[in-house]
Structures are given as C-alpha cells and as structure tokens.
Image (cartoon, rainbow, N blue to C red; front, top):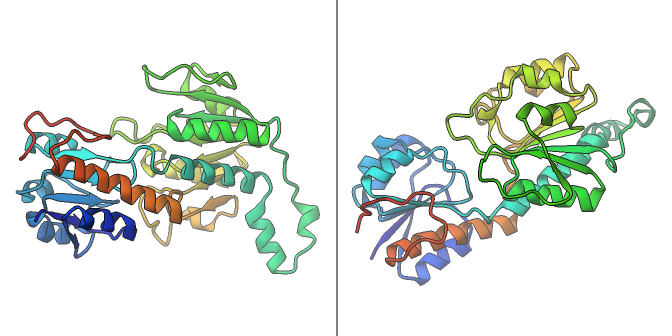
Length: 321
C-alpha cells in the first residue's frame, strides 16, 4: 500500500478520494522542517500546503515520487532538487482562481466604501462617521491589474461587467494571450501604478521578481488610489508600502500576504488604519478547500497510477518508479 503524507490537514473529500483508491493517508506531525524530516522518508507522495521543501527535506524522502500542491503556488519547493531526484510536482491551477478573484473584488468594494472603518465606527455608536468619511463609486474607476492569468482574468471580468469599472493590465509573460476586448493592455509595469484607481497584483513569486514593487511605484500612484496584494508578500518592499500609507502617498491598501507570516507583533502595518489586513485566507472557503484537496489528490493518483499528471509543474527526465 502506497503512503500519502499530508503534513497540514485538508478537506475530508480529498482524503476520502485517496483512501477509496487504496492509498494509506498519513497525517504528519507538523509543517516545520524538523517534523517534515521525520515524516517524509516513508512517503510515496506528499499532498502539501504552505510548508517549505528544500533540498535537504527532498533528499530525505527516499521513496517520494510525487508531491502535489493544495492550491497553486510552488515557490516554497526546490524545483531543481525535485527534478534531479525524479520527483513529480503538480498543483491545481484552476482550483482557487474564482475564489481569490471574488476576494479581490470584495477588497475593492471594502476599500472604496470604507466598510471596515464604517463597521468599527458604528459598533462604537459613532454615527457621525458617515459625515466625516465619504466613499467613492466604483463605476467608471480604473482597475489596473499586474498579471492577467486565471485570477486576473476572472477579476477583470467581474469588475468590468459587475461593477462597470475600466480595466487595464500589464502582464510580464511574453507568451501572454491576447487580452479580452474590455481590458486595455499596458506597455509597462509602471504604467499600471500611474493609471489605476485600484492596483491589484496577480503574478507569482519566482525568485527573480521579488521586491519589484518599491517606493518608486507607490510614488507613481494617484493619492486617491488603493493598492491590493493577494499574491505573495515577497513581491513588494513592505516597509516602502508602510511609508506610502503613513505619508498619504496613496489612499489605502489591502493585503492578504506578508513579508513574514504571520506578521511580527511590531509590524507597523498593524497600527495603520488605512490598510485592510486579512490572514492569507483569500482561497479559504469551504467550496475552494474541497476543490484544492480533490485536485491535489487527483495529481497524486495520476502519477502513482503511472499516468501523466493533468497539471504538472515540472517534467522530471527520469521519474522515480
């Protein structure tokens, strides 16, 4: 019986999928490196979430044939080491796209209408808040997207057709497909910051593009504009965003990801009232958790059954048998 290690628990549907196909599902001791080093030697497959898998952990996994991401991002996996060891890496690129796009749309509405501050004021019976802080209409405002992959495209569609927003986008990929008719293509990264009333980030961290959003970009933004990052904390210089928010270079921001997770208790973002903070939960809905679990389990079953995975991240030249 082949063993599937799950260091961080998932929806029951994913575990049931694996058990029904004859796999032994083993919940791990934890997500930290020391726990992984104890657990991985017996695993034929790993269904992983946000744990880090460096070369040392992968080398300890002597039987490992496939590791499948619960979600999309694989930036915490040493893909080069996995390739050299003959380990397949798969993910679920369609599992959370709509869920994250919905969250992004929600943050746009929350920022534009000051929903968090309005809620806080009303709980304090501060009804005069309604006269001190006025929101904005979203219809006709410009949403600037950086990254027009699955999430970006869905957000563009929802913002344009649902809210009547203008949508512009910049995409780093040279092979990016033609944009929809309702999305105007931007020629440069910085143009997105110049043009957007809301600037939303939707591209992955790949090790080469970290810290590409700095004070320079925030200075390009309109003072009335908002910055949204539900992608990866490493993509920006967090202290530069703090400066932009503290000095009113921009109106506000929404973050679901951070330089360090969870944020340190002395992180200055926690003291700012013009930033909406959520705990990296943009994809954590009941429906999405089931999809991510099932897509990850599917990738494991495909590889261990000798099939080509539907959603491969790599293609090891000499895969383990």
